[in-house]
Length: 140
Image (cartoon, rainbow, N blue to C red; front, side, top):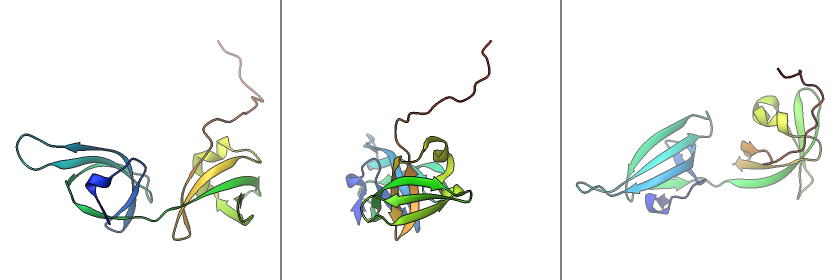
């Protein structure tokens, strides 16, 4: 359990049984009334971003996330196949799990993947990629 004084950006907490990533937070101590923490949370199941306020000192369960480096191997049409860089285990991910990151990964690219209880929660493609422009319409 952690309280609001221990919040950090990128931390994953459990609220009402759902995984939420803290995007940003701010401790606020108004002149009148008790202190509170204003947060922006991303629901990792739906992708929805919401703003919430919590009382200072309120306690939350910290989600235990496992972070792995995965290397992209190939796409067989229905799945994207990755390999765990430490165990060499192959992990197939469907198109929905990879999402828009599919446009930015090429064979051999390493991505960061986050798992909770063995389930993939999110993937983070590399910050920079080298891609070749194959075709482009002429500019005006």
